[in-house]
Length: 211
Image 1 (cartoon, rainbow, N blue to C red):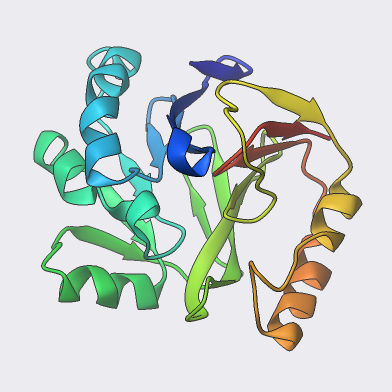
Image 2 (cartoon, helix red, strand yellow; image 1 turned 60 degrees about the vertical axis):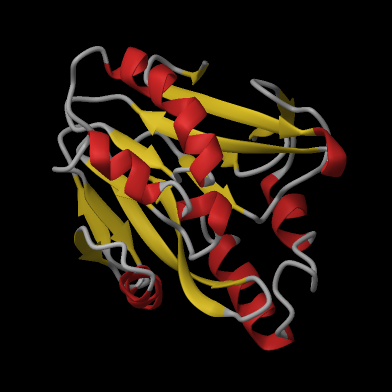
């Protein structure tokens, strides 16, 4: 499903028992980028749609924000169909992937680093993700102003292909201890994100945000 502009596609699944939607994104350019794979089951369901959207193009990159089943559980499945795709992740995520036997061509990035492609530029930020506070990565696509928020800025409900108007400062200030339990790291992340000026948030769960 085309979400914004002419090149950002969203693939979604709603899980009724927990009333939560899960999103993956394809930035469709000459060097296509997939953001998250979904779980193994979600990746299997996404594959026909992903291939249809690519229309013969080869997947170039897969960005994994952090090590969790709905972010990278389907990575090995996607790589079976796109073996030349390079996985972009943090050093911690790379170690976890290796430990689970998921071996691929990895591009390890650190906060503050960038990845430049034909028509987009990803900039990465530290993401102390979830309960273990493992080092992950958040990313903004600078040319379009698209922020990929992973598990930040999320909400429940069947939100597939939907967007809502919002305010960036409010969204950042609403990041709570359930998302990042460590107070110091949470406040540092807020300070970092408040310096950004995105115009669109591609959420991992819930509606996307127009800013």
